[in-house]
Length: 263
Image 1 (cartoon, rainbow, N blue to C red):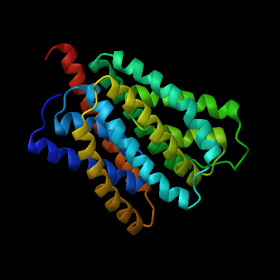
Image 2 (image 1 turned 90 degrees about the horizontal axis):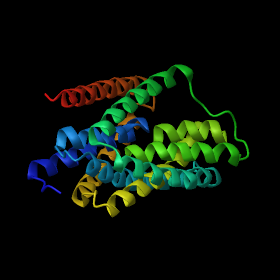
Image 3 (image 1 turned 180 degrees about the vertical axis):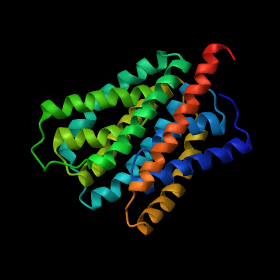
Image 4 (image 1 turned 90 degrees about the vertical axis):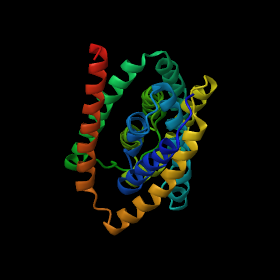
């Protein structure tokens, strides 16, 4: 793995801070920025190392943030475990597929995924996604939802909270607050599964992980503070973030198309 310069280390901390700030501010979606920030801001050009390293950082942050939600009674463990365990199997299968994929292909697909996330975040403000009441956990619905979500999360090396939260809402009938809290267990489990698989293949840069985690903790503190000051009315912020995702995805598509054209 290439040695990081002092500037790259600083940029790693700042990039982790951006991810943590967004997660603290709007409660989800921020981890999708971890990969493009590490690629295009920090300048780590091995996509597989980027995916493996960011997956571990995101997993650690998810487990840390799970604790306060648990104390507030926002975690439903039965639904969380039923979703996370098959999801971990899916995540492992996703990592096997991801490591075999060409760098350009996986980044191109990642950019398309960012566009999907941006649309979901924008539409969620209009459709008012909420839980439809607490129901007994139906394994026939929760297990397939967890498996499919884990597969996507493992392939792209992301926490997948933007998929896990609605997955828990519609498969387990959780209210939004409990779906968000419960989702963190799956985010951490999927990210850890992905990271272990990549680490065994020598595709994790441990220094980057530490720098990203440090920046993420600091950014998260400021994000939560800003969210509190705003009274948690984050509709405009989520729409703004959707726009940022579209711009970043557009840039990634542009870069990859130029690479395919040999320019």
